[in-house]
Length: 287
Image (cartoon, rainbow, N blue to C red):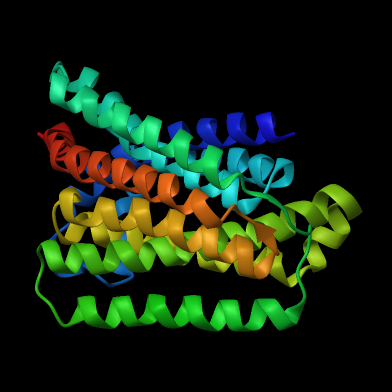
């Protein structure tokens, strides 16, 4: 089951990367004055490339649900870090360009760091469902952090800081969406479609998911991917790991294992920041 969890999560990362590339192209065609307004999504819906991007996101959500049913949140969600190298590698052939050797080194750092970190942390255990005593504080904290990120971003003009803050807000919303999706997917798997429709987590992940997409579009539109993507990529993984441990009582190795885990985090962080500076090549898809 853990192997299936990994395979589904990697497939979800690839599908989400495709959706992100297409959504980035659509976001760049929207006037800056529509940022942080519902009009942003209205303008983008009229673009066929945005609709194709949404199909990629839907496919990613299906793979993500399968991954979360197959394994722990603390294992499945960090694998979506691979979305960043996937996004770059998908965009480069379209542009007719090659990734320089240093770029491949950064991709290697991300893959090796992620594999090493997950192997050392060995996420596992946990429950299929969580009590309201765990859900209520988790939702309050996540929604509060998301709201704070939006408020701070709203006070700044378009640019890297605003993109980073919106990327962070989107990361927290994504992580909460994944946690709620895991509960809803397990309900569907164990009790059927009727129970799935009556579970509050079903509507919770739908609302959070829409909000996360809205924040992502604004982050992409507000400034360079080099600012928003590291916050989105690393923030999603970290918050998901915390939610897996706190909400679902999943466990990770501690003690001396923390040393190689921190080394793995450093590799992933280096690769993420380096590739984020290369991802702006995707901007040329709109020209």
